[in-house]
Amino acid sequence: MKKHSKTLTDVSKRMLIEKGMNMVAGLDLGDKYSHLWLLDLDGRVVESKRIRTSAPALEKYFSVWAAMRVVFEAGTHANWIYRLLERLGHEPLMADTRRLALITASLSKDDRADAERLAELGLRMPEMLNCVQPCSVEIQRDRVVLKARDTLIATRTKLINSVRGTLKSLGHRLPACDGAAFVRKAGPRIPAELNETLRPLLLAIQHVSDEIRRYDKRIEQLCERYPATLRLRSIRGVGPITALAYVLHLNNDPRLLRTSRDAGPRLGLRPKRRDSGARSPELSITKSGDRMLRRLLVQCAQYILGRHGQDSHLRRWGLRLAERGGKSAKRKAIVATARKLAVLLHVLWKSDTNFDPFYGAGPRQAA
Image 1 (cartoon, rainbow, N blue to C red):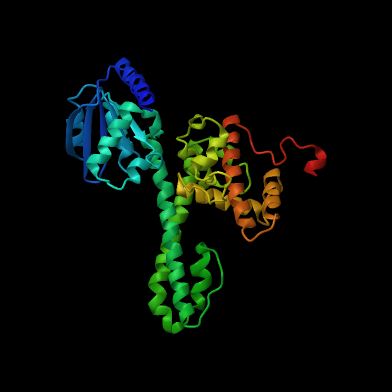
Image 2: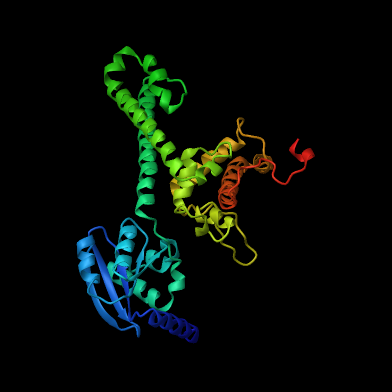
């Protein structure tokens, strides 16, 4: 084991020397302050200090050093720090937090120790970091539009549930309706004695719905800047929001995935595995990656398998899974369809083709 570790270290050192680097830094990012651990190529500690997590402070520190490898975890500040370090001539490595269990699950966790472990991994085994590629400023700003709309949707749902719960506790029930039509349909049914009390909530719901519609128009305009969304929307049930979220998640570059089958695991739609001996338990999905996009794909899968879904190989495949029986068969079929949909979207994008409901099927099968 020691010999194998030494071989990995020698290879990593040789690669750093070829790049003209003689140091590796581990940077444990915090909201206000970050801890830095600096090593030379022999693993000796050069410096350990705390730096303020701000652009001026980080630029002042790293601008005086020669090119080095800087390892840090993906997070809130990771994207802009990556761009800053790259501009200063360093080699930033943004590590996937899911692959760093020795840090996240450590029983003796602190900023200094985390920075030390990041530096050690960056020096000896950088391939274990499963580095994440940052997005451009433009794509990051476009993602904000989707996240802001998603926040408004959650806010409106919470307000509507509050109104429904209040009336239900007093013996009144409101009709089931879409969130956008809630004020129009539910407003006249609110008892007169509660109208003054609940009116501010109804006004807030209406205002949030108006803002959501403005975001929807803006998302339609953004889709025009990303032509790949047109291919993805050729699947009935995949709308502009899901298509745009998918394209932006992959930084508008389908080559970010090695194969289309990697789309499912990347979005956390692959079942966990914990095989041991003869035991192979059935576990839930990993739920890693972009939570909002995963939820959107599940919603698309629900539409595809629902009564309004277009007849296709994808729909028939999902319905066959749902018919296998069992209490959770339908739920599993929806998740499996969402995973298959994630793969299919990447295939359409990479091949630049529209969706064919019965691709490769003969006339009899299509009929």
